[in-house]
Length: 444
Image (cartoon, rainbow, N blue to C red):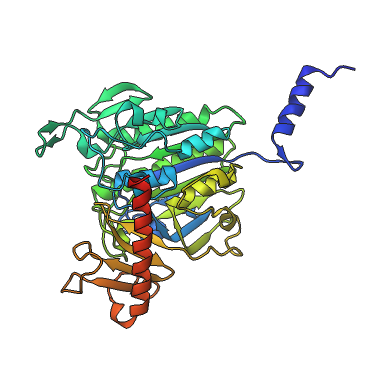
């Protein structure tokens, strides 16, 4: 007897979605990436002057990291690291940020996170700030994203005049895919527009097909702007208002996911691209564009209700470099074929944080000019001023400094003289690694 066509189709879908006889639905993935939000600019990280109930709830639904890092101190290289899983120097994008007059960008030959997920059955969208090259060949639609809705670079570049090369930047462009749909738009509405687009895309997703959404908010990068709805809401002033609107954005997205019945199987990763320019990094030292902890240790929350235990707080060192290999593992990609990644797959830890221990590994702090200025290994951090170079002797405020971050999170007590062997070991690690990246980026 011939089976009806719909039965055959159903059997085919079941077979395609099964592994080892057990049906597995790939999770949706949302990366919520803010701009210049400090370590202490979230309620559960000690925010003062404003509240972030939606971000706090997200942390309670998953895991909150106390030692979460980004591999750069400013916008462009930090985004490179997130989307490639590589230190920016490995792809020769470690210096400063791209400008409206720049002619370079992220090499389209680099395999991005969007391309990885697209190759594994995901629809992909980028909403918000791109800042990896504004020329068409470098833009999101040529880097693995099906959809792009947002701006090509930072909001302070809106109509800015660069006196050093007499370049007049145009009004801030706004795109839908490759079509210019606006210029010099009202920045008070940026957070709202991005959020509405994100919610719209969530509700219009093809049922049963997983999606990846990279939501890169423009705020709280200066100049600060907030919608009328949130103006004057915080006791901190405009900055607090801006953060509260970003928190609202997260709340709207979570609500949409719940309404669609897909929240439980959606991975949400929340973090910032670097430390604050005007926000707070307490109790850390430093801010944006600095390789002190405040410049690169940022809030980091991951939620996946179906898999990650609720209410977990972890002091394991994790970075945005780990996002690429971790998601590759989660979606069933062959990690062995991915070459040159600098992060680790932490998927086992995320699902079993109370029983899995991450291996000790170094983290390297690259300055805005591309110089390697510090390394962390375990609780030890060695910081070397760029003004000194490798072989300079200590001199006044410029010095080779060693800190124990477990006992001195604020990097206030230099104990290098007490531990010369540790200093020498960490300095050698820095030299070897930086030379390896240099050879990869400039000599291959």
